[in-house]
Length: 173
Image (cartoon, rainbow, N blue to C red; front, top):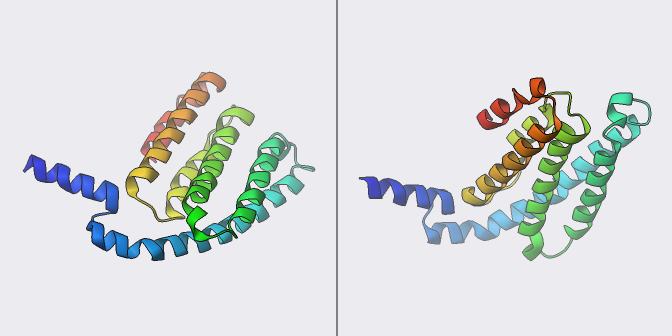
């Protein structure tokens, strides 16, 4: 019984409960979808980041995050440019895109705005895993690494009355 549980968990983590042959049959469709989504989502991210860069010139709260907006926009331009390459490069670009969004949320929540709650990071933590399809284990590892980095930065940078709630929030979400 216990052994069956671990076999099912391994199968879920590595191939979302599909057999290896079933997963292999879907690989081309997954890569094609991820490639299309990468082009779409990187463009959407660029539009929103550009808007935030413009808003930050007249809004004092947004101005504190100008460097984060600009850095994320530059990386999104690079990702968007590279996304026109052959599909073989899609998975590394997908994880770069995900890492940039999560890193952006970490910087906003724990570095540039340490006195406010980490709403941006929590929102991205909920959204990013839904954008692309990949093996659950890799997505979970990305989220856990992001949580660890965020937790460390929150404890180091945020006032204790703020960081007391943030770990609860990101662990639950």
